[in-house]
Image (cartoon, rainbow, N blue to C red; front, side, top):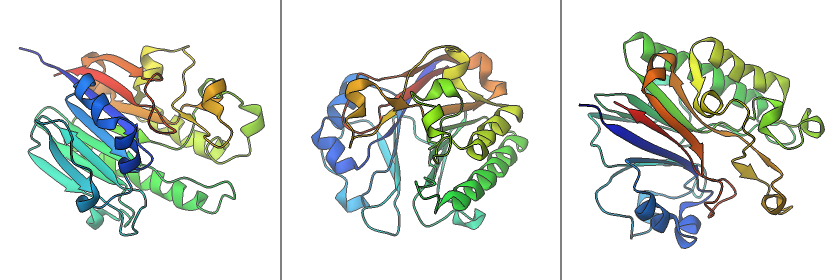
Length: 256
């Protein structure tokens, strides 16, 4: 008997602020099986009370207070949880949280931002390279891998409103976009583009310029799956009508 699993990923841009703006209300109405949150900016004792019941919660927080961090709520109890895996050269910025289930291995990831001055660009590229090796190794060991989160790069021109103006901006540099192309060539599927080849939809808008009001956005939040899971993918979507952050939630439904 097959079972459909709904997984949501959302960069909440500060969990405490997002809860005030309706995060827990959204979760209680959406009722996904798993929520992967990025940029939670909170230690465990700072996570607000009031989350919907029935979920296990895991957190990888950054050493630096009020910065980065990823958290996963899951109704399904994982058989293993890997917090950061610093033995495998992850940083101390709370960027990776891995939950392993019998059906699949899920990585909740907040990829680095290269910054406008490109001061973190090499760090971001090194992270990408290490990450690809890591997920390929998981796959080689027979794990069915799904990864999601804020990748901080728009892949193709369809994925942002103003591609020409942003050719030299980190987040749409050729060298960054080539990384995602490399992922795809190595068998990792961008689920939204696979399900919606021509659909224009964004996941992040600049708050300073009130870009969301004009829908001048970027698609930088993704779900990727191993191509072996392609037949299991039932839907991939972007919830642009959900507010609470400068990003909106993205999700998939997968049959296991």
